[in-house]
Length: 160
Image (cartoon, rainbow, N blue to C red):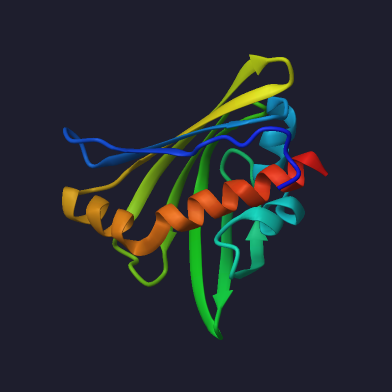
């Protein structure tokens, strides 16, 4: 990893509501971390586990926009899609998130980019789903590996 510091990814499963909260710090200012989430050419470079190859079908990251992207692994495609409900540069992204293999499992996600000063950012991503069963399936799907490895890849991209 090229980053000067390694940050842990904290994944919190709420016991009272069916949500997962992911908290991660980056050694880059909010504008740079935000851009890596909104520019499809950058997003495809870091999103997902290391063993996957990404493809963007469309990615219109603006309030009212939508997206669809694919992770390819061992010849198998896993597609994800959703809508951007609110996008505020360098501050906030509110979106839906659906895995095409489970089209009824829609998550509402809120990504907050917090300026920590000294060129550092804390990203807090909250994913709310319909039920505890859906939340547990989301966690059991291997998303933790994809999130951790994706953020490590993002560290490398931001450092480059």
